[in-house]
Image 1 (cartoon, rainbow, N blue to C red):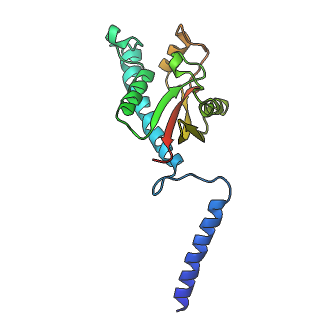
Image 2 (cartoon, rainbow, N blue to C red):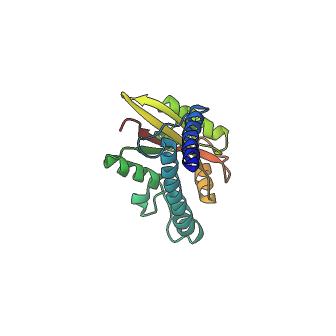
Length: 198
């Protein structure tokens, strides 16, 4: 009997502590039932970032920059070349959007070569891009916004120069508004948006 009372008291105390702690500090929006939005976007970003890093380092970095067996070009179809990493990312985002996914993602920058990647389509995007640029990409930016009557959870993650070919391409491109990037610099951001009422 005493063990049952102690066990029951422990369960009630744990529930009360969890409820109390959940009310303290920053609340975390959650998809019911399931992952909090931030954990979902963090996991999605990790996959997107890893895929892009593998393509950048092991395909473009090796075949175009080191071995020079094929070049990477923004005019890849005409030049019979590899698409640039940012173009591969955009193609994936467009394919995802065409499949009516319940989320979207894009690559944006405060210093875009391609003007369609310019930051600031929304106030949250502007704030997020500035935040990750100011903190050197050490932390993502999370916010909520309403677009077209739909409430979204929006996450912004730093896009960091991971290999020399990224830096060289951006610094030497005729349309680049910034030409002094170095390895490890924040060059832009990945914006992931998830509807909160889906």
